[in-house]
Length: 526
Image 1 (cartoon, one colour):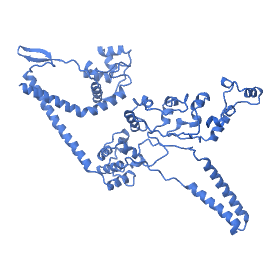
Image 2 (cartoon, helix red, strand yellow):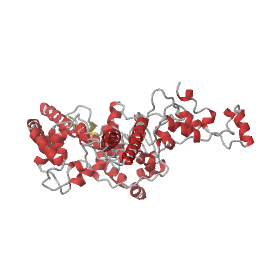
Image 3 (cartoon, one colour):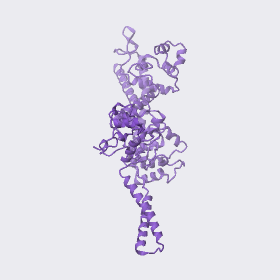
Image 4 (cartoon, one colour):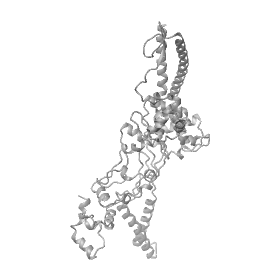
């Protein structure tokens, strides 16, 4: 009997461990997401009371049925006069907890997540045990003999768990077979080529759905595509070909579910497309060929100019000389103007719009969410540079904001991955001055009271930041000539007696930045 009891206990422990181990990873992940979305604004787990009580150990303080009712509609339970509910409501200054439409299953997932973070164990409940003197109540932690009825109950539980273990073994064997097939079915170059045809829409899907490239670009573009590029997909989902195929057959995001509804891929189509996407791993987006239209026009007009001069001096084919003179003057004017413009634009980057490693939109953050420039770029008032926001600054909001309206979770997940791995994001700098030029943000922002828009343009209207100003020396010099200085009220300028006298006498109406030395060479070049 004693050996049988030990076997039963050991079996139960092992079975419980196996059952929990298989599902805990997914349950905790889903529970954490649900907790962050519905609970974290008012409750903590083990960090003390907030707007509502600390939820550490809540699963032991209240029974499960009561928790389900209270979480779904706390006011219903309070109005019913439940003592525990009224006590909580009174303690936390009658803060009204919003009703939730979560299913029982999701609420149980949240409770399980809270329980998983509780390292302390509840007090053991008393159980009835059999002794030589008869029945008595004891503690479940103390060794004692168990009644025959209890053994029967435990035996039936073992049988039930045995059935679950068999089912679990079958599922594990199925997963192993799937992985074997995935490894054995390595795509060939022909499979990748078929996938490319489907992805680019050169060959239609059986369901007549839209081509993949209509949402996921493979070329570099100068506008913001909120959907991840094909290269992004390949570099993010870098597991087996089967895993990508599984995502195509059973989309996870709400956006993909909506797009694929009624346009499901066949097994073969998913395999080919997955093969093509995975082939793009560790590659770059394709650079579109640049147009050489202006160069061709320049060469054509330069040729006309050359022929006009040649005929005027040597061949004399065109009898009216004035025609050659007019052709020469017009073509010379065009060539000279194009040459001067090209020369002056050397090392200037007006219109520069680089793609960033994460699709960050100033329009969304600044205009729609009313985030001030100084919140992210926190050093322009006292430093030479304005500063690139740190990951910590991003995570102030994105610890709670897990999904974007336009991009879903894909781009924010990049941010969270970088934060978790403590890897800085390699943002591409848009505005940059030559090394021999000194420029101070503090001088222009704090002293001159210039707004960011003066140099950077109307950033709040930009999805992708573009350099709208040439940032050339001429541009800076002209700005200094036109910018009025707060001359009278600033004691720093009290020693500029000549300018003060000129203002008093009416010789000048205002003082501009260039008049107080802003355009002196050594101010910027030293």
